[in-house]
Length: 146
Image 1: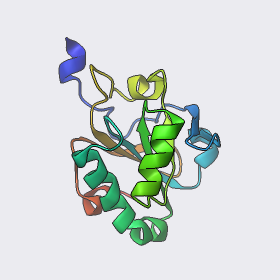
Image 2 (image 1 turned 135 degrees about the vertical axis):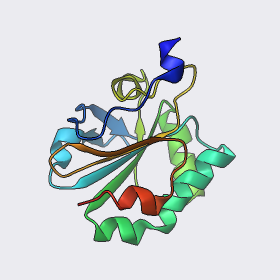
Image 3 (image 1 turned 30 degrees about the vertical axis):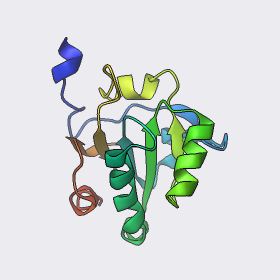
Image 4 (image 1 turned 90 degrees about the horizontal axis):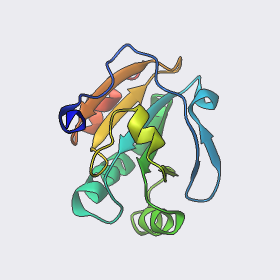
């Protein structure tokens, strides 16, 4: 039951690398994103009210993220069709990564019965600068961008 109470990875640690595809089959590898801040939004499911609200808050502050050299990715085990529909329906300007085997969720301590709602900001060198469970404000997350 330790998964139930586990904390996110600690701020100041190197973020685990990953290599998956987004909803359109484009590859996404964390290592290749060096030079940018990266926000990973782990969320339980597409088309749920809280998940929609959380990702749409990042959509609505997309320009702020871009001004801070920050790339945003939603992450959950949903399939490509579900992600495409969810992204199009909500006009999300950022990709949704397919974590089919929950390998990313596991390496970022977000796995459980469902994916634990967790947000990370990783700096341009691959170091975790922000990690929090739940639905933190976009401003709070982006404040960690350097």
